[in-house]
Amino acid sequence: MRMRPNSLGSGKGRNRIVGGLLAWAAVAATIAPTATARADDAKPFRLCADPTNLPFSSDSPSQPGFYVEIGRALAQALGEPIAYDWYKSYFGKRTVRVTLLGKQCDAMIGLPRSEDFMGPAVIFSNSFAKEGYALVAARGLALGGVDDLKGRRVAVQYASTPQNLLATRDDIQKVTVLSPEEGMQALDQGKADVAFIWGPVAGWLNKTAYNDRYQIQLTEGEGLSWDAAIGFAKTSAELRDRVDAILPQLQGTIAGLAVKYGLPAGQPVRFGAAQAVPAGTTTGTGPGASVVQVANGVATEAKGDASALNAATVGAGKEIFNGTCAHCHGPDAIQSERKIDLRLLRHRYGDDMRDTFWKTVHDGRPAKGMPAWSEVFTDEQFDSIYSFLLTVQAESND
Ligand code: HEC
Figure 1 (tube, rainbow, N blue to C red):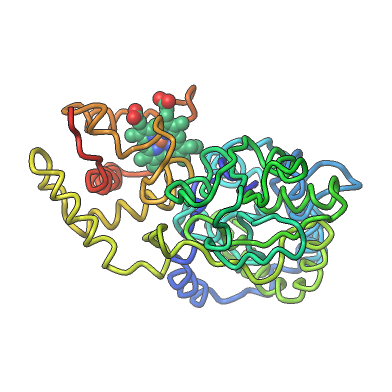
Figure 2 (figure 1 turned 135 degrees about the horizontal axis):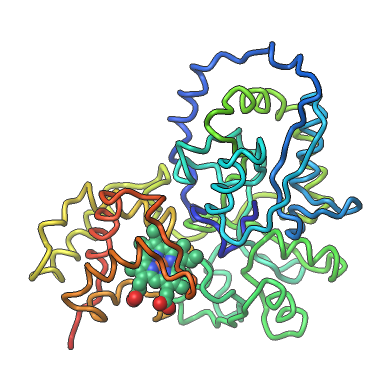
């Protein structure tokens, strides 16, 4: 599955990925690896992949992509032939539901390693790479963090995490682009000094179209990068354990493939302490942030559903929000694009705010790009997201 900026359900990123790790490790520890199943006949290792998602996957035999080549190496180490289920994905979780959970394949390479990402139905291998947004610039330009972007023209993709992250920085000039391709062009044409765009595509284009002219630095911080892992249906714990046992010996192969496909490597540039509060799903979440938000919420919540504001509920809602909704609506709902700025819900709908929220999250607005979530979350979880959103509503002055 791809981890394109706008296709990931949990990107978590957006930030989010660390949460399930301990719980996951505990579960894994209780499952005794069974060596016996290896004596398999010729049952293939079936991989779900997108045929048109380079640098990650493609159905071209000469240029199969990072994930597909990892899949081949894995199948070989497992002693099984490989088979593919090609599926053109356009939205992460839906694809996973149809393919992996629909038993059309055994594994999906490149899912964000987080229980938030469809856990517990989906389980994960250990992480094999880190993927996310990257800073692309002329070689030699020293970029160690957000302050090094001051005074520069920075290309950011519309409605992406970097755009949200830089939204409040008046000292950084944003050049809005609609795709990573356009971000690279803006650099190439001298319209931007830096492109803060989706790393895998930037790296791939740098390699294939720009003669490796640019330096590409992975970033980390709220919503900026993910630990990529291999996802399995929860009924495949035995296979997952065999894969985990093999992964360490494939690290060299994987590192070579990362270079082959131009994926950004090296120490990530850390972003975000200033404005992106750590997502609830990262281990870095302190209680402090929630408390402040709750206080704000109470201040703007004098009338109406103040009773819903309970710190634990708000915290849970915020966690889900940052895990699942933030890559479109912005981390902590901070979003510069008015149309999808959920801090304006009260302003927009007044007393109908709750009804509108409820209907929209259950049914989605598929034609407009808002997915339906009723199969993904319980009503209690929707309530907690709503409680969180109440704490971030803009002052209504109409
Ligand atoms: C793939 C991107 C995407 C994701 C993920 C997403 N949304 Fe949306 N959402 C949208 C878009 C686009 C709209 C605007 C639709 C329109 O123009 O009517 C929207 C609209 C909404 C609205 C109505 C806003 C209004 O002012 O009418 C709510 C409420 C909402 N989303 C909540 C959520 C919640 C909660 C989540 C997470 C569970 C979420 N969204 C995840 C894209 C997304």
